[in-house]
Image 1 (cartoon, helix red, strand yellow):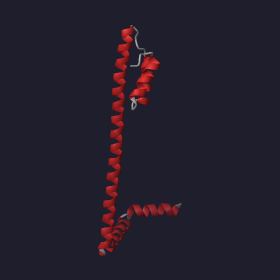
Image 2 (cartoon, helix red, strand yellow):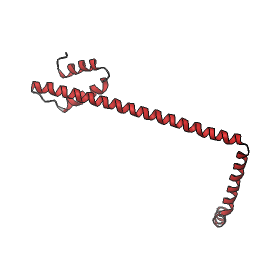
Image 3 (cartoon, rainbow, N blue to C red):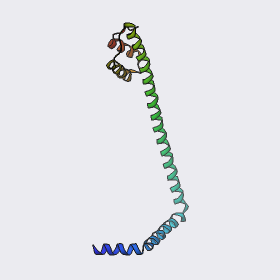
Image 4 (tube, rainbow, N blue to C red):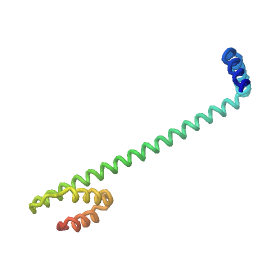
Length: 132
């Protein structure tokens, strides 16, 4: 333990010696790499391909996010239109549409918004409306 403490005291007072040695090592490695331009070219090619891969993956994620937002918007528009239809049908009968039925409507629209015909049949069956 005392050797470690002594090493720490030496390092605190002579920090520049390991720092200069590290700089010299880095300079030597850079010299070796740049001595042959093939290495530098391959490193730059690797960086370019890495950036191209990153750009492709980022674009794919943005496309997925955009598609999810569009799908959510379609679902909300479908829900709003179906809710208005149901509220009108119920108001024509003199009945108010309660929250549980609104939640059921939202679930049905989220599950079957891509097939409007089956969605209409399901709504008519569950809410007792005429299908036509």
